[in-house]
Image 1: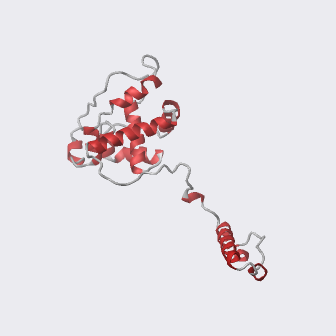
Image 2: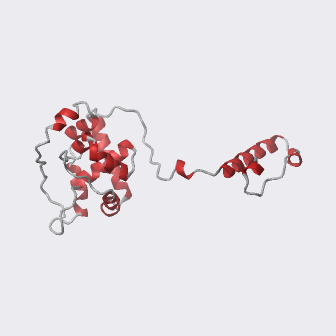
Length: 197
């Protein structure tokens, strides 16, 4: 269930944000200058307005994803950092002592509330557009969606790496001199790196 009313954070510790999150902090500036109510308008139809238990506010969920995009962190890392980073908590409209969400909620939010893959990009794009308009972001950096790029944790084995280099070397040499086919050693068929070398 989503409430039409905005909730106000009541905490005896709320003034700590004025001490630890400086005025020039990018997240403070985005929070104070960007009206995120457009998120509610976009996602209103994805929630039940009068039934079920209260959901984590969609604006907060979106802000988690926006932080994830800005800082290039995993779901687990963004939630962990929001546990202790006061600028994150301030940006997320949380009291300093508020508990953070479970990271699995971000996956559910993306799957159930942002079923249309383009919706998240649309919302992030609109936020960035507003931030550029208000001159909060002045970067010329290009953000690339690396969903389908190869992870550094999924690299080739040393044997596969050498096979690829060997193949490229043979190909380059054969383009210049085909007679080298007889002079090169045969391709290795074992699984040993030394044999490939």
